[in-house]
Length: 604
Image: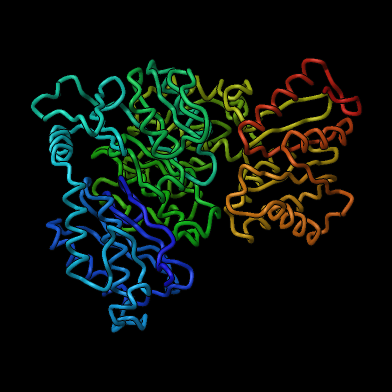
């Protein structure tokens, strides 16, 4: 028979469905779950919880046209069993509409089944199987340690192999198969460290790096995790995409860390939930269309709900920093699932915007809340009833002479997070005045090279809104000359999103677009499929056939674009692969060192 779910996974922390661990499954394509089936599924979950001795806990169904996600909360030491409970409950719920309720015993092959999994045709046998799984998975020693830590106000980090109590220099870690008793733990040596979570559709990595730099200026050795890796006190610890739970745990388990700033990507939240139980501050930079079609996220509301999961991790007096220029975030801030009680809202919410006198910011200040935005050319931080000027925006390198509006927003948001972490405004201003002056400050984000009158910009812009913002900044920096763009996209986007990226590029009427194959980002797409979609959309939007090239690697695409350039042209390079970026940056640095000019031969 057809398996009615295509993905079933554990959620080890706060997640899209509830602020607790549990399990979720995604229904399979072609499986329709109606309202009656959802009610049967809920009833099955509650019955099995009683049979297993689990406490009552949240259940959530997020369905669209009969398909989507079914999630259940579960005890921390029962998550594998919870996935099986969830799958079995769905199988039972679908039986009345499957035509299999009265199949004879000899037709058991018509049911999805594997050894040691619940037998759908025999409820008594299935429950015995689930009880045995639950007993085998139980870890009373783990539960006792977690409960003891929570009673002492200590955060916990847990993965498949290790348990950590405390954070940074105040943490201890044990293998799960060698846990001590609570009485044997040196509780007085354990403590938390200041933690900030950074999420959003665009600007996450820049904001993360900026907050970390402010923390370092404030004298705290800071652990940073991001799409580029894990860094502690400026020293790289791990390379690669560490914007998920693994990166957060690596940063928080480093004994040198006195503070942590953790980029928190949508994918990790949806796949595993948050690794972090408690943070002093969290920021959602913005929400824009991206990654639709994955893990039950189909529209901006779903995506905003996912980003706002970081609010579940806020400490009792933690601060949630939101973008007042994002109308969806403004609306979601009033949502009962994420909104903070009216009596505390002014103290626990902080708002930023490009305009410091945005009506929402003005009203929030009147209630005693913190804000940050631009006023009369300066970035102004308001906290504790006092305005503090952080400096002229055009003098802040990250603003690209004031042209990079999205980076002005990143500066404002980062300032509020740093303020919530207890950093003095004077130190925040110092970092804002310097960060971004060197390409090494913010690798892969708005990096600039000048070859005479020709400008080359490297950035990560990976969705339509990000590319739109990048091209606006690029044209402000270099308003004349022809435009060349290197363009590619990861395969885990819907066709419409890939086409939207190409449409943004086409609107700028580039003289050249070099389409790049991203084999390491294919993510289920056939070779050439993404390039074909980009090419078709560019041509449909009026780009000439002769203005299109295709390259197999990012470095080849960049070389082709550089060879095409003339004096005064502008080349925009959204580079996604870290290895590819390293090769591109090395090439551009070498060209700059040799004073290369467009029209001259490229270095080998």
